[in-house]
Length: 443
Image: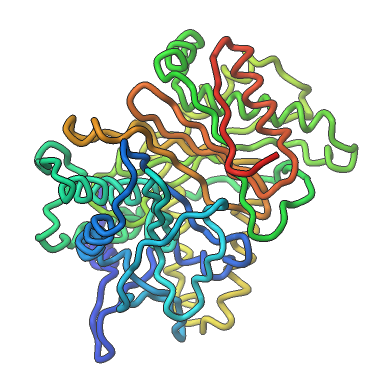
């Protein structure tokens, strides 16, 4: 995709002025400060469980080195006249004790709040990242470097040349690591995607404030991939279809008033680095929304799988995804929006999020894919986990990661009800896939 040189200039987000270093929010993050509140922390979590108890002194030393290399994550949020922006977090980032509920008790507008945190418990290292600064790809790169440097300090040899995600921590970050790739690849003349109607959503009493349930299903990766191949679909396509099947069952049991929302739509994040090359560790993901129109009647699981396959393959290609960049970046560049004071922008951005955000989807299925490490390091890592950011609108979201022989499917939920998770994993068991269920909260 061609882009004018002005796009490359706009993609720069690091600056210095008389007050010091500051960073602009990337295009995906620019709207988030206006809608972050309470349980909606926009924190997602990536963790690694090792083969021995964590040595906190070694982890702290590794964090200091890795945090220095990823200095563009070690930032705080500030409110300017026209936009929010980021400034360096000057205080040391300390390893925190992990707790029962991830991704909660986080207040990004509070002065002194670093936009990522590292937690440890037993054999687990957990990183929680604000979507203000990165997406899953940037987050997993940080965690892999943290694990690698921790194991190096514990006497395990590390060869960063074996993995492109591992960095020379003594070298400065490249300019491209920090760029806003949305602006770099902004196609000014592309049509925008069609506007969608509101989607059916879950309804349930909430968990007590501060609680975020993570229910994880552990499956054999090879068997699950074989099952997907038997349907002629990818792993993501199969799991999205299972999600649709569960939502359809919930819709059928809903009240007539709630069934007036006849559209089921699942947000499937797409890593745009697969289509548009960049080394950026900032946000560079977009989304597709496969959907089911329940006015046409319910569908068998086999029909849902087939429709999901065709919809995802139709939408996930470079030009189709670029329409979303055109809409999102183009709106930010409208002159009247750029000069509007932030005080007046905030209601506009909340309305924009309502128009194009969670109201248009029923759930999220985010597949980070397979995590890899050099063999010497992989031998000391038992598992990786991926927990989605909480949403008080959707209540429940799903995220997926695979490591070695296992697939880990985590539902993060603010809902008291576990019906969605029950239906999802029951369908997988009906496909003859063994599932082991784990949960962070007691019954």
